[in-house]
Structure formats: C-alpha cells, structure tokens
Amino acid sequence: MSNLESHLGTELVSGDPGEEPLGPDVGDVSEDSPRKGIEVPLGGPTVVVQDLSVHYRVPVSARPDGRTEEQGRGRAVLRRLGWSRSVTVRAVRQVSFVVRSGESVGVVGHNGSGKSTLLRVIAGLETPTHGRVFASSTPAFLGINAALLPELSGRQNVRIGLLAMGKTPPEVQRLMSDVVTLADIGDSIDLPMKTYSTGMAGRLRFAISASARPDILLIDEALAAGDAASKERAEARMAEIRKEAGTIFLVSHAAQTIEEMCTRAIWLHQGELIADGPAYETARAYRWWAWNVAKGEHDKATGLLEDARARRTETPPPPAPPAPTAKRNP
Amino acid sequence: MSSATADRIIEVNGSPVDISGLRPVGTRAPLPAYVRDMWSRRYFIWADAHARAFSSNRDMLLGNGWMIGRPLLDGLAFFLVFGVMLGTSKGVDNYIGWLLVGVYIFSFTTRSLSGGAAAMAAGRNLIRAFPFPRATVPMAMVVREVISTFPVITMMLIMIAAIPPHASITWRWLLFLPVLVLQSMFNAGLVFYAARITAAIPDARLLIGFLTRFWMYGSGVMFSLDRFVSHPRLLAILELNPLYCVIELSRDLLVYGTTPDPKLWVTLSLWAVFTPLIGFLYFWQGEESYARE
Image: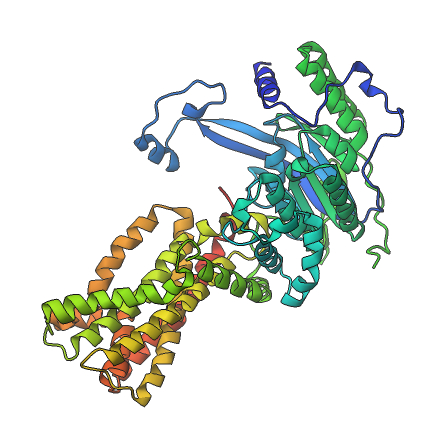
C-alpha cells in the first residue's frame, strides 16, 4: 500500500479546497435535504465503454516510485524506437459502463486514479490499450488548458470557437450574447485572452462549449475555479443540455461538486472501477474513504474499498432504465 | 442482415446494449462524411485564417502596416544590393525585375510550407478544445498565407513597374492570376504534408528550412538554371520542378510580356491538381493522431 501513501501525500500537499474534512457521520444520507444534481428523464445510450484498459509504457528512469536512472539523448531516441527498459502503468483497468442521454456522470477518485485518462479516451484524445468506446457523436472536451487563441479578444475567441463547432455566422450572432452572459467576465470579453486568469478562461471556454449545445460534453475540473453564482448558472446550463437528450461527464477530485451537479457517479481507484451508482451515495462513500485515508486509518480505508468492491460484484451495475420510445422532446 | 444486427448489440457488464447509432470514438470519419464536415466548417477556416493573418503584427508599433512594409524593405534591399551597388545583370535582361519576381514568388511557397510545418502546434489549443475535422487547421493556414501574400504581390507588381528598366504592363498580366491560383493549390498540398509530418516528428521543421535552400537554387530564383547546369537531361528534370514553372511563367508574363511555353502550364497544372489531392488523403489518414500528446 505504499502507492496509497504516495497518493495521500500528494493529496495533502495539493490541499483540496472543495473537500472539507468530514466526520464519521458522513454515511448519514437523510440529513436536511442536501443539494443534488437535477434529474431529467433518460433516453437511449450515448456513451458505451466496454472493457476499457489504458496502459502506459513509462521508461524505467521515470518510475513512479521516484528512483531515477541517468538518461541521455541516445536513450530517448532508443525509447522512441521502442528499445528501452520500461514499466507498464495501468492507468485504467477493465472499466465498463453505459451512459444514457440525460445523465450527468461524475467521476471521482484520488490524483492518479485514472479519471482524466478515462475522460480523454472518451473524448478520442487517447487510444485505449484494450476495449472499445462508442459514442453517439464526437464529444466536446473541456480540459484544463488556458487560452484558445491568446492574441485575440474573448469575443473573437467565442466567434472562432462557435464556428469550429460547426455553427454558421448568423447562428454565432444569435449565440454571442448568450455566451457572454453565461461566461460573465464583464468588460474583459474585449481584452486579449492571454490577459485572462485561469478561472476566467475556463468560464469562457465552458460558455462557448455549452452554448453550442454538444450532445456529449466532457468537463475536466474546469468548473472548480468558478464562484457559487457561476457554478449555479453552469449547472442550469448543463441540465438544459441534458434535457435536450445530451450527456455530461464531470471529472473532479472535489467530491462535493460531483454530489451537487451530477445524477450518477463513478469512483475510480488506481484505474479500477470501485463503484458506479447514484451520485450522492457514491460520492459520499468516496469521501468517507478519503477521510479515513487522510486520517491515516489505512486498514479501515482498505476495508471500505473491499466493501465497495464486494457490493459491486453482488449487485449488478445500476439497472439501465428502459429506453423510452417517444424520446427527444422538442 | 442478421449478422449486421448482431454487430449492433454488444455485451457490457453482462447485459446487452444496442449500439446502433453509436460510433467508435477516436476513429476518423469516412472520406465523404469528412469532406462534408470540412465544408460545414468553411466559415471557421475563413475566420481563423483572417484572425491570424491580421493579428500576427499586433505587437508592432506600425501594426498591420508591416504587411506592406516588410515586402517593401525586402525589395529595396535587393534593389540596393543588385541594382545600385553591384550593378550586375548576369546576362539577364532587366535583372532586378527578374530577381524580384523570383524572390517574391518563391517566398509565397516557402512561407506556406513553414506555416504548414507549424500549423498543428499553433492550432493545438483549438484542436484539444473543440471537435472538428483537423484538416481545417492546415486549410486555414493555406488561406492565411494567401491573405497575407496579397500585399506582397501588390508590392512586387508596383516595384517591377517602377524600377528601371520598367516592366511594361500588358494584358498578359491578367494571366498571372491563374498562375497564382495554381501555385496556391500546390502550396495547399505541401501544407497538408508538412502538417502531418511535423505533427509526428517536430524535428522535421528544421529539416524543411534546410531543404528549402536547395530548392531555391533548383528553381532559378537568383541564378538562371542554364547558367550552372549544362547537362541537358538534368536540366530537363529540373524544369519539372513546380516552383521553377511558377517563377518562369510569372517572369514571362510580368517582366518580359511574352507568351510562356505551354509545357510550363501543363507541368504546373499537374502538380497543382495532384499535390493537394494526395496531400489531403495523407493528412486525413492521420486524423486520429493530431489531438494526442
């Protein structure tokens, strides 16, 4: 479990703002109606992940255990050509699930648990080692990178972004005010995007992607920087997308965000799917586990993991609701 | 029929799932759908090209004045060195006009080529943020270079008419337009190749600059080919070079007001049709790889 400790170490150092320490009474679900994701009727499958595994070949010099080995240029060339000692890191291990339109799926897990890798495979930005991913359309992906075209103003970036997503100039004109309102970055919209803070850039990028109404929207921690008001607007917009038969994925290591914004959650630990169920219960179970890890209760944490695994094997994954025939309400 | 239906049902976690209407992610669209997708992004191509062409001088005090200023200074440098200081003609009529056309026309292709080599890196943020056919990125680079080459060509026309011995303006100047179109088409092909190769091997960018220098001598930009190539067969091969064709056609039409050899038109047209076609297919084949790290 030395790996567990190293995860714990990074987690403590990074200081997670969204995760206030939880007492042992976390398991109590019935306390004064907590905020939960907005439910909308579900449709047919939009994302199908079948037996997905992603392995990385990491050169021995860059071992995760921190031991290093001198590495020259020659070795780098050899590595590219495939002649180097390397170890395999299993970032995602045999993960399977089906997501239907209308769902908002949160992915929780510690740093390095494979959350972002999973999302990037669904976005088509990475090739799986094994398994398949199907989607109803090319997903739009919101990653953590900053500006789009740093030299251009926010407004020009909105225009180019919307056109890139296949909108026509009249549509862009119609959507422009909507994007500006949703992004809510004030007069900065006319400044070059390179002057934006990470939070502002993230909000603008979210506003662009969300206003283009993609069928599938993948979000990697992009909303973590938003304040309460912008978070609420973002959530309302995400619910709108889902009502129009869309699907949302949200990756965050702040389990509270997942609890509040999602209807379903997936818990990954070292690439393995530990739990897959309603957002509130899954995120709570994860937080309870994370709290025990943080307190140094490793035996208890391991026990909780075992419990979650056992629950998963005895009860099959959440029953897929029957796809309604008359779907896609106008 | 039944096997096709069976393909549409897969088993996930022990229960069957109907995946009709779903597509495997991260795979490129079939060519007709891809081309249709490209067409629906035509406004994006234009907007991206336009924005980048006019924002590249943003840090300069004179801003977009440099779109005209830079070619003007380049031309003046050649005029001063070859026309005033050296005063050489190298046995070529109107050597200054001959040289200016060669340099400006050649630079249109080399700028497109180096732009293509940097296109995927420059478009990385957009590529990772939005789903769209990736060939729009090199395509926008082609359009961008066409936009920024307009002031350059205008400057060139003004200079060859103004600098003595003046090139006379004839109706043949109109035929220069199709030459530019053919050259742009050829450039588009080069950009597709350069974009895919440098996306896979970034080091190739340096190699391109190196090879361009040889290409310049092989295209008769500063010295005419027959001055240092005496072997007739080698000369015939060098004359198949598309840039040699573009430059010779332009010189005949603009500087000397003569009707060019039809062989030049045919050779250039073949290059202009097949290079972009094959380049586009080559780029499309690598579609899955461009968003990866």
